[in-house]
Image (tube, rainbow, N blue to C red; front, side, top):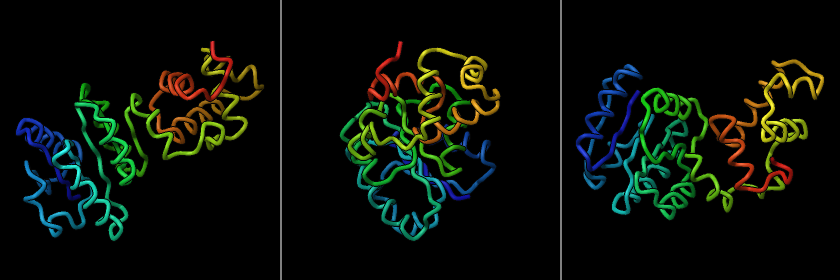
Length: 207
């Protein structure tokens, strides 16, 4: 696996080099402080590009997105500690796979990296409201009627067992529905579901 780590901070470059080497068991990691130092040849066949983003290196995301047309398995992940909404929206337009605002917890960060590598997108929950212009409208969210029903119960604070009792199904079925909801909405947990529903007015009767 070939990985690119781009950051002006040597601490971020060195730390991620060590962590990704340890977690993904690869020594093929390119680190750079300046996107202008990277040629297209450097970027070819990169499996994961991790970019500590700012206004000075947003162009690297565009370059990577163009190169990815030839290497569709390549993933792009961004760290934006300044929460620049304009950069986020532009990055989403370029088709990035992951966008996070910080790295607070090692285990959660590893989970996000592996999720992105497995082909699932991940956007920080604080930023999801800004993807609406690129996604379906709230009334067209790609959930089945049963998933919408489960989402409604989750937002009311019911446990899996309680929802299963209400719908006369097994706990496993509810767990599967919730997993589908999290995947389709690019969320992490039940709390994210509630926040997302509140922010985007998916349902009207949240308590």
